[in-house]
Length: 350
Image 1: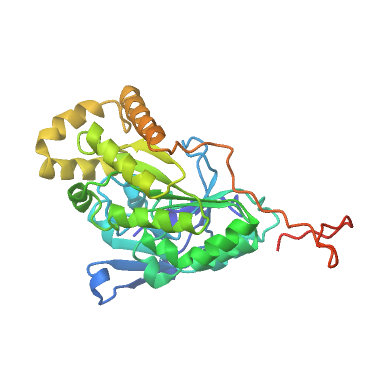
Image 2 (image 1 turned 90 degrees about the vertical axis):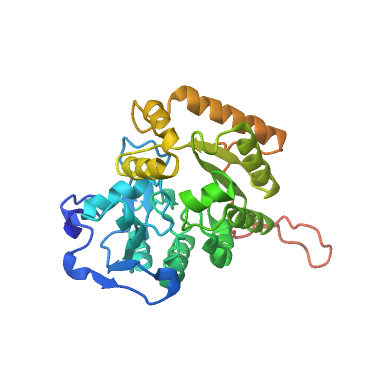
């Protein structure tokens, strides 16, 4: 495997520094039903903060990814291509060969303490899910969230995993000192489609239970309605059922995203489509003839339909400029009158 070819820009700038060396890799398998057929490659990362390329469409600059590869096994996952950088297979290998950065919490805490770090927003779950099944064994996220909390560093999480509820207390503590954004991915609620397209994920209704629980605990949670899969989950009735279920969960927003098929994911998805829905292959070849993204007219149609439904059910699209704010302390009260005193006080975030 070509472990040495992953480079980081740093401290954050040395382009010739490998992310980890081959001598740092320990390969393990576990004799338990939930990890049958899965191989874990444990590595000690030299960096955990990843700068997003300037040409990316992503609205953030920094990410943290404690894992590579994902047991969710979503047939459309755009991150499949990244496995080829390690000379690993982007199909079954992506689903079953999982790279684990076992020292991620310690490395992140060190990097957040650097004088060069400016406290920028950090996005998690944007490549592979940080709450995939492996997290139940390796427990990397509690240390990562604790480091972000202790540095009051803003962050967001996107997940299909129910395991995020294990870290509810850490999320609440973080929200007291910094901006925290949480989104759950639910592209559709059709159980038959879910079983074939996202076989390693919790069922859509279980993910919506996560939204409901987070909201009940004061952590506003949006839903990324992704992906909307052409000809399989995009009928008016299907869109309505999905938005209705999202609204019932108490989601603060719903944001649709049409399936995109980048190299690596495209080949795997089209092979699945040929097996499961061969009559759709030609339609997909025409719809995605110009590249990884569906035509603008199709994306605009889906977005309009979902936003109209969201308005009907009392929720709206995610909007910029709505960060979570740190609550200001209540003014001290007089012990005798119970009224606010006018004397200046020392304010603290902790």
